[in-house]
Image 1 (cartoon, helix red, strand yellow):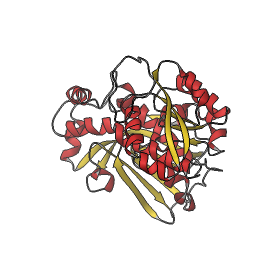
Image 2 (tube, helix red, strand yellow):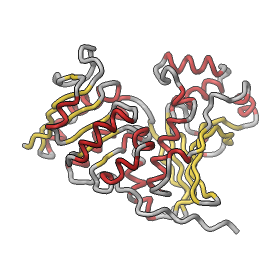
Image 3 (cartoon, one colour):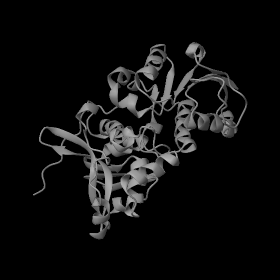
Image 4 (cartoon, helix red, strand yellow):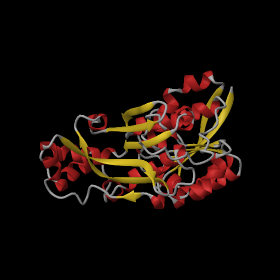
Amino acid sequence: MKTLKIGLLGCGTVGSGVLTLLHRRRDLIGALGYRVQVEGVLVRDPLKPRSFEGPDVPLTDSPHFLEGVDVVIEVMGGVERPLGMVRPALEAGRTVITANKAMLAERWEDLEPFARQGRLYYEASVMAGTPVIAPLATVARGSQPKSLRAILNGTCAYILARMEQGLGYAEALLHAQDLGYAEDPPTLDVGGFDAAHKLTVLARMLFDPTFRYADVQVQGIDALPDGVVLEARARGERVMLVGSVTPGERGWQARVAPEFVSADLPLAQVRDGRNALHLETEENGLLAIEGAGAGGLVTASAVLGDLIAYLQGVPGPLPLAAAAPLPAPAN
């Protein structure tokens, strides 16, 4: 039995879920020939009580423990601070598993060389525990992509669903915050930026490996006129925050914005609390993936899945080699 030394960055909802699943799945990890040893958990306040299953772990506000680990798991969020720990770990030859879509979207140039070595795993960065990165990095690349449309932010889906029931935007947002769905301030969610981070990761996986976060056109739900959601419902439509990748005049273009979606279309069947990705391809037609898009244990399950892949010798998702050609114009 080999000892796998892990360093965990962050112990919020997702980090606590990771520790819980490491304990619950210890027999599965053991069957692969490993025993997990958590060398340290980076937190802001080591004295704050944490709730997770399993043995106690060393909580600290210093990342000194990273020097002695085999795998770094990063679930703290943000961009510059985690990058300042993740990149040196990768440079030192360690493997990194991250759920951080913002860091991946905004600082990809710092991480791509290590991703091409297969040492960066990030299934949990988009749609939580619903597998989308692995399919896009493997089987889906055998088909010519035509477009992608996706529901990527559960907070906005929840708010819009409550507005369909007659609540105003401010009241629906307050409900989402009370339930812990939306942060305070909620700008990343309702402004569309969280969805734009995730869409950037997806666009690079299948359409263009050089796609930049700055090139995503972003419009959130915070500027929707009063009554527009109910008016759409009366017409047989739903207002949804949709992330899309489509052919443009100069290449692939990405956009996050509220859209009117006909209630009889598959995308409109996605209920609040769920995420969905609909990929239109030349050979396979419409490919649809739907599942839970948020939650501590949900996201942690994808982190654990990446760890299991690493233990089985499966490299992290390799970046796309070249941009996919634009589909031929319809006759």
